Image 1 (cartoon, rainbow, N blue to C red):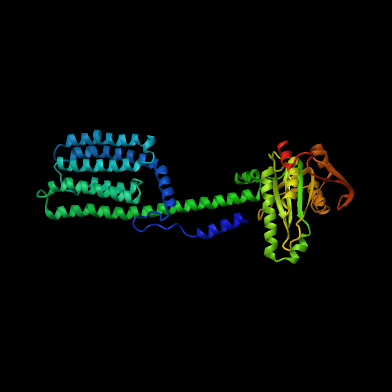
Image 2: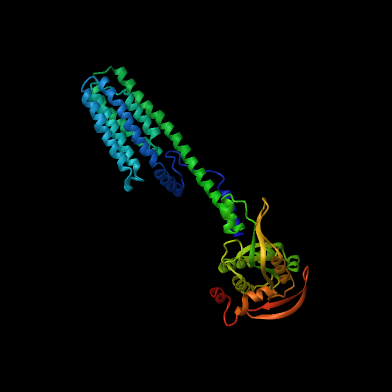
Length: 441
């Protein structure tokens, strides 16, 4: 119940995406922001490398354009672009494979952007074409904002730095050599490219963050479903269902089944407030759940105040009848000292049987893992015909446990659907408690 209550509260709190800061678009929650940046830096490494290769390819294309388009020093500048600038980009590409740069690649991208911008400005000035209206640099601006997977603020800082550097290198040479109207128009064109790129980068960053948040929340919901499935079904059965294996019904040759039931629970439920009854039942079953985990057996289900456990199921289980016997003794001890709401002692009846059974998942809606077979019915009858504080078992259980436990013959009793049966009361193991019995397995 604690598991369900906690996850319901989480569901109520996760109706909306985590809030973002208005200016930086960072998540307001520090942990969300840290997780997002870690995922982006690790997940975009391949895109970073692709961006470097695309940059090298574009430079190679622009080399002959420089050769035929520049007014001066065209041969030298095209050679510098083809060999020098491409070499720098190739170095950045190679550094991205070093462990140090795996999560620090934004520094490489920003460095590459500055290198290309500086070369473009130098090429324009030294090539006799100093005006700032340059299609190559405008392309660089859009690459920074869109192709490079930089965070929004990183993209703005990189593009702004490159723009300031480009204008600072070209404007002094353009003044006097270019008409003022053309100079202003060229500068405005570059500034406009930054504005358009800024809004595009902001929108892209917003979509990326929303997609990341939704992905994380979907994973969280998937994990909740996984956890819930593991609590409803045995782990091996749940795993098979997750893998798409719908075949979960099998015949198992030797399974021990235990039923435990609170003494006079019907009378208790009728005389107490519902909250008191459910609180008591929850306290008892939480203790039983902890003991089930401790002894390595499988809780099958609860039916009202009846608690059903099995060892040897599902397939692959390493527990056996000794685990069930040890669990039964510990369950008796677990309720010692517990009282009903009216102060009277609380007692339980326990019945155990063993033998071949059929096990599998029932239904597609509200499904559960269940057991069928004579040992299941017999174990239930051992519990219902038992006495408070005692463990009633069948001959198969006595034969399987041997001298590991003490048994007191009860004699023949009438069992519904089976007639008269010889049964025994099982007591603690001689000279050792139930914990020792588990260790002796």
